[in-house]
Amino acid sequence: MSKTVFITGGSGGIGSAAVRTFAGAGYNVAFTYNKNEAAAKALSAEIPGSLSLRCDVTDGESVKTAVNAALTHFGKIDVLINNAGIAEQILFTDITENRWDRMLDTNLKSCFLTAKAVIPQMISRKSGLVINVSSMWGITGASCEVHYSAAKSGVIGLSKALAKELGPSGIRVNAVAPGVIDTPMNSHLDENAMSMLKEEIPLGKIGRPEEVAGAMLFLAENEYITGQVITVDGGMVI
Ligand code: NDP
Image 1 (cartoon, helix red, strand yellow):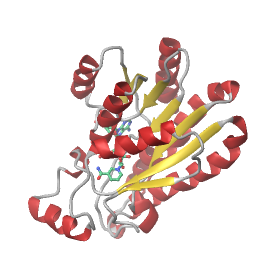
Image 2 (cartoon, rainbow, N blue to C red):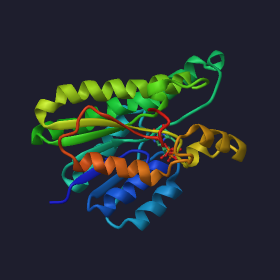
Image 3 (cartoon, rainbow, N blue to C red):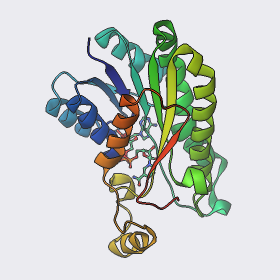
Image 4 (cartoon, rainbow, N blue to C red):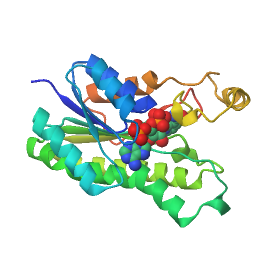
């Protein structure tokens, strides 16, 4: 029986690359979108047999509904990829309580909500993998991204703690920490900002979403790796 992966944020840059990569490796794929229905429709048309589901990852009921639809359709979820997220560059003094909550809810609470919905059936089968998408800023911290950095650090803490708790149940939990990746999330950066960033990257180039998706598949295929943070960042964090 084929394995099933559940990917949040499949309508975005890294998420859609993950959908294509796991489908190409023979997985059944369920993926979520929030606002970008057009991208989700186009992707499900491209990947026959995939299931696209609308889901707001900040809302526990919405998450449960999407996860249950995937479980009904495919029977089980072997791999959960918590990829949906938002970023924002803003001075610390301008971060309002609402902005803080939105950032933490979308990037961190979402990982808690999906894990709560998906993990019980993994525990019953004594098998499963969770991959949480952090960021290099979750490791080093970024100026003007205090709320984002805090959320992505939280993703790492959550991943390590869950890996310890769920290892005895046969479930692995890892994180990937991308550097600067060419996706819509970075579309606000102009050419000048991009070339300044490139100068800071030892490999001298921006990453591709497929490279992050490749690291996710590597984690899925290597069953002795748990509690790790894999950076995919051209050497930004060494
Ligand atoms: P995109 O902006 O391309 O995609 C973001 C995805 O998240 C979209 O599918 C979007 O759905 C979804 N999303 C946003 N808010 C919600 C919500 N409330 N509920 C459900 N889904 C939501 O970004 P990337 O592909 O670049 O980012 C993917 C992940 O990688 C994020 O967690 C990001 O923080 C992380 N990352 C990205 C880096 C980069 O340089 N690009 C670097 C480091 C980490 P929709 O569009 O349908 O609303």
